[in-house]
Length: 202
Length: 202
Image (cartoon, rainbow over all chains, first blue to last red; front, side, top):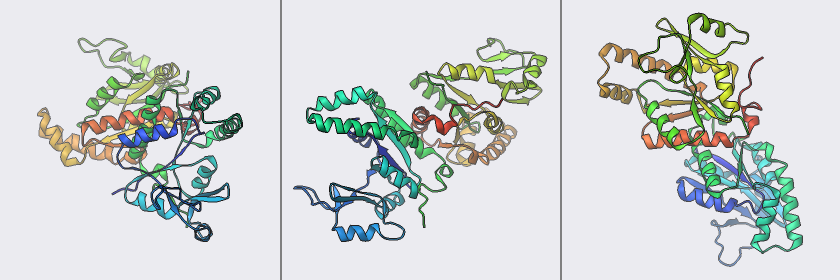
């Protein structure tokens, strides 16, 4: 059995990423999301090992400070720690699964230091369309909206570092693009991914 | 409008390449075969500019000996000359068409010297299956069969130089793979193809 792919997916919020990924996972077997570690408290209904691996801060720090680092990428958000564990991803890839990481541009930059992922960025057709979509949700106040648009602007500035760019203009075409990227990468000869899907630093 | 892709497709005869490509072209608009130049005589029903550009030997040699060479790749087969003209491919790519070149491993090696193509190799599941398929056609005598199998062995030795490998085990999966490779490459950021689809040598 050959190793699975590691696929990094980034997109500003409001780009339709969740809808696209859900549809692609329905159509394409062998694709899995990685389950992140977090130090935040489980919300009602969340199950350890399903939504997240819930760990204590000392547990998180132990993994983070291993040599090499036990996380492919990690970050602190609002006082909680989040990270993608190397072991988690490695186990799934070695079992032949293609692993999806839904992370931002800073997380993606960390992953690229350690592994050789397939990187995909999803953008809206324009910032005007993104603003329209975020307003359409009706869940954002003006302050959050402005912050999201600013974040989007910053994230989009980093798209050059990604291998693939999907413009989510029509949903069916965006789904077809992501699906095709994964199928194509499965046919790509391994030497293009550095001999193995991931070149772990020792 | 962005430039089209240049896609090099190689496969030993009997791999089902023609069937796969015909199906993909039916499903995917914007895909065209390049029309080769040849010095051989047109057969009944063949039209200049459709099956081939039919040229005289002096015309062929003039193109071939230009600096830079007027052909992306060229070869002599049974006393006739065949070649893919740079102008032909460039015009189609600049018009936004994705251009398919159906050429052997030696032609592919020539193209890679001049351009930055997407390269795809189609193989049968095994040499035994290939032999079975060639025998199934019932059009080959033992001599031709042995020659085709030997050619296949030599061609397959060159697959490392290709970016994508499609194993034609099930036809529908092979069609899906080639289709996905083309769609994925359309989403691939240009920098991965050397800034432009083809980097012509000056």
